[in-house]
Image 1: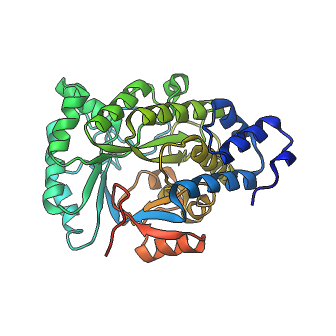
Image 2 (image 1 turned 180 degrees about the vertical axis):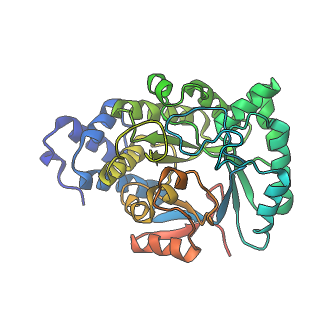
Length: 368
């Protein structure tokens, strides 16, 4: 239950809460007022009202696994704990045969999605990744392939001398069906120059996703938070995503990604609190009124915080994973070997008071 709004002393917060409850679109000033709110119970109530209007009592999960073809990368993001140089200890670069071997272990399992993301390898071109997609699809024809961040696509296109449209069209022909939302980080270019100076810029990231949407390739979007950014940078990021979604309708889900501080060069002491993580989830749900799903990515958050996020607007908890991703474990995440069974995922949802729904990549319920 939400306390009577007239009891909210801060007039800006009261106005934002009134707009949220009436289903009105929030402006930047409203988002800033919400970020300044210290009453997480109010934010939880507002975000829960919003998510129930969009998704009722449903919380989605899927049966998935990740392929990370390489952690060798041309970029030098100071927040990254994953990147390695060629030949450096801890580096890997899977061949197509290696990837076939990974897929063969899932042939008898009811997976519905293969998630493929990795470093931007300097010596691999778009034809390598087209062959990779084809190999996965041949072995797992029932599974949708969600692959490649906009940063990876940008490098493939530059190497080939192709447009984004031509590059994405080739990948689609070989099995690409959806894109994850990585590489967005924070769109503000001043912050971006400090975090990832040689990485694909915000404008290009948005153009690549717009092009994908136009070609019928659905995608997600992310925001990396809890490092050197300010609330205004977060709000600007959300508004740019909302603007593109108004134009294309191609984003299925938004994933707030918490910065993890271990084993990187950024030098931010500590990490934001769980209460700040939950506050951010609530604000994202309220600001992004046109992106239908808000994902609590449990390998990054941990299972307990993932469950709490369901009370702050989240309606998706990702999937089974099967200990197939190292991106967050290499940055010090509590989930060093992320894997959950379907029963465990469903138990987290029902214990939070919601109804677990297995989905495919496109949020269509899976009937078994």
